[in-house]
Image (cartoon, rainbow, N blue to C red):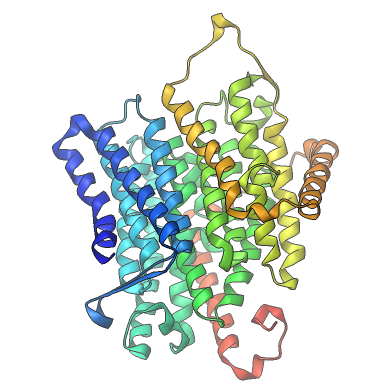
Amino acid sequence: MTALTLTWIAFPFLVGFTIYLLPKLDRYLALFGALFSAGYAAWLFVHQSPIELRLLDRFGVSLLLDPLAGFFILTNALVTLAVILYCWRSDKNTFFYAQTLILHGSINAALACTDFISLYVALEVLSIASFLLIVYPRSDRSIWVGLRYLFVSNIAMLFYLVGAVLVYKAHHSFDFVGLKVAPPEALALIFLGLLVKGGIFISGLWLPLTHSESEAPVSALMSGIVVKAAVLPLARCALLLEEVDPIVRILGVGTALLGVFYAVFEKDTKRILAWSTTSQLGFILAAPEVAGFYALTHGLVKAALFLIAGILPSRNLNELQTRSIPTPIWIALAVASFSISGFPLLSGFGAKVLTMKNLLPWQVIGMNVAAFGTAVTYARFIFLPHRQQQEAERSPLQPGFWAAMALLLGGLIVANVVYYDAYNLQNIIKPLATIALSWLAYWFVFRRIAIKLPRMLEEFDHLIGFMGLSLVLLFWIAIARSNPLFSGLPFYFGAP
């Protein structure tokens, strides 16, 4: 098992660098690398028993592979496969495929780590690979967006590194469980780095611009899986340490509400999807014990939606509402939108039911509001006009697009087996009622509202400022959690 696991971690990097030596096989090698990860994820589900590895004793690497990680690894494999298929007959060069696979490998490594130093290395490699893919078009705009992402990420990870050192000082290892005995500032510093990398709450305000301005395949990778490389460690810490669980849940609810608030009023399709990603990351963190299934469902949906957004005739939602899109494309768009809204027969339904069943009582109202807002957001895509194209006016899509859609949307159907117990009358009625009410709200209220929210908060200097505010907030919560004087305070300090 150790040999197989280490081979799985190293394999994408080896294949990624091999692509440079065999450029004519770039697509095939990239495809093979992603398929290997998918096979390993399937083996994890069959094996069931967690695999714990410790290399070089407490000074080295600590890995944990279990079904929770398996969901994230499978998401990484399927989204990467879909992007490779989508780009199969495009003009993407060897560099693109090699970096995609290196990014894939760094995400796998981050998902397996349970010590802060190894996670730091994996996340930094991930940042560089993401940056190179963001700036791939080499336009002035893409270079600025990429540098902005890299600067914010690196600044956050410097804070993270200081926190990791404090954990080692207190626990004499870098293991996640060291947070239990580490000083409160260690938790604040480490969580700041992970919140920024994961695009969580106000620390993640870099996300909408970065995801919306990248090319469609890169946006699919970023929203589908890249941000989740920092979300799983947050969920893992919540599961390992009961003191951390309420903090992660609070951040989950806040993120879900913040993201959906912006998504409901946004008019740019890619920015709608980007803000929705922020909101959906909140759903993943709101119930850490079932984070894997929701991450899988969201990754498939968001990758599909960003790839579809890349071929729509306009990014402006108002323009799309006045011109028809081809019916086959609309069907793919509607299926993904139905899933993320929680419609039965698609895995988004089971993921939402499972998440809602694992919420604490104080979370229920906020998360139901977020679910309602999500359904309103995607009603705007579902009700876009569509028509069959005449033969003369058809512009054929690349075959890779439909191969990617078959993989992603087919995955939403197959993944229903993960939580088939969700299909009972009570569970079905509530999501359908929520969707029906959200459609009514869309038609009679939100469709008529034209509010343009300011983007000032997304400017670079404000991103750094919000990083400081997040650090203060995290430090305050950590102090409160560690002080017995606060043990009787309400839910926002973690009391049940």
